[in-house]
Image 1 (cartoon, helix red, strand yellow):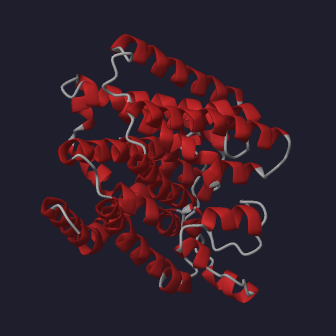
Image 2 (tube, rainbow, N blue to C red):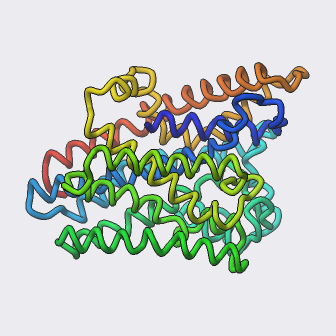
Length: 376
């Protein structure tokens, strides 16, 4: 599922970065233009997995350790993030090949905060509230930095949700809290969009508008063993959510560029999260099903393992691929787009593999050793 999510995101960003005419995509246009939903799949997946792991530790030990959780998250997220951040800031920024890295622009403009918001996981708020519109911020560090907005949302979730689980032991109360937030935030997005409280891009990226996408995944983990969630009823919910999402995408209500409308930003984003969560629950419930086994194919597992590093590095790799593939004029055909996207993906996989072996894997091994030790 991680592989599907990152491949969807790369296909979408390939179309944006190459300024490919979307009408030339033909039968895959709707699929490519909704590739942004790969981030929403990541959100649901993170909420589902993190909550499942915390509940599992709680069942084994009687109570999970907050300190162990935060240390494990830090070892998983921070080393490769800062490795890429250093590459973007001090290596890629020195070359004109990487159009998605505009560090020199930020420094020349004399931004008071520079890149610090992006280095400290509140860049989604800095971009949304202090730099103007998402698409044209005053001090734009480039798309390679702006995509970190989703990491900000996840980090804020990791900070807050475990505290709720730690402080509230009753499953019923936990479900009630998560459900209340998951009902409140779509309403907040709707009214914020309708009444122009914030820019559309801010509503799409600010944590207080988007945490429900992770909490819906958490609800799936909390309610996985619930007797009220019978398989048939669960499938009906998932198919209904997928149908609503597809309808709103086709209608233009659920879109990023161009921006959709209030209904898509509220009901649509929630429907994507629900459909993703139900799919995850089905995969966990039926580990031997044909679709589950298909997702365990070695190439998908490998890409899934690299997906985090791929997300961090894919914009500079798209820049590099554009320089190489489009160094000669090419017509705007579906074939050329598919070849270019495959080229961008392969470069992202290659760069992520280097990051994984050089940076990620040593810290992941340390993370596993700490998990076996049972204390930090």
